[in-house]
Amino acid sequence: MHKEELIQLHTYMAQMKRYFERHGVTQEFDEYKSLSISPVHIHRSKADHKRAIFILGGELAHLMSRDDSIFEESPQMRESVNSAVKVMGNN
Figure 1 (tube, helix red, strand yellow):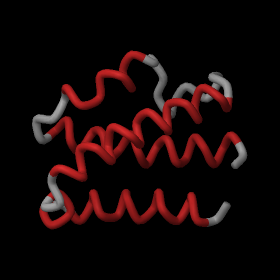
Figure 2 (cartoon, rainbow, N blue to C red):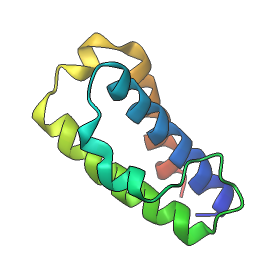
Figure 3 (tube, rainbow, N blue to C red):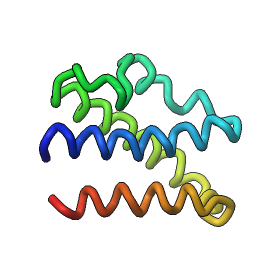
Figure 4 (tube, helix red, strand yellow):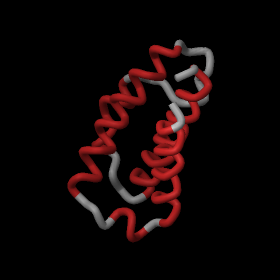
């Protein structure tokens, strides 16, 4: 993936993280937060964004594996996941 594509994927995943945080889930993202990187940090290296994606992806997967009802409650969450999957599928 190119750096721009990684940043786009990082953006989708950060949207998912914000959704969970708005619904009271905050402790799940401690490792990601410790990286001090977000999708808007375009000056950071491709490797930094890739690491953030893997860590955030793991944290999101763990959280979603515990509660499948998340997608039933939010069409926006489903759209974010679908968009992220499309980005990954194009590469």
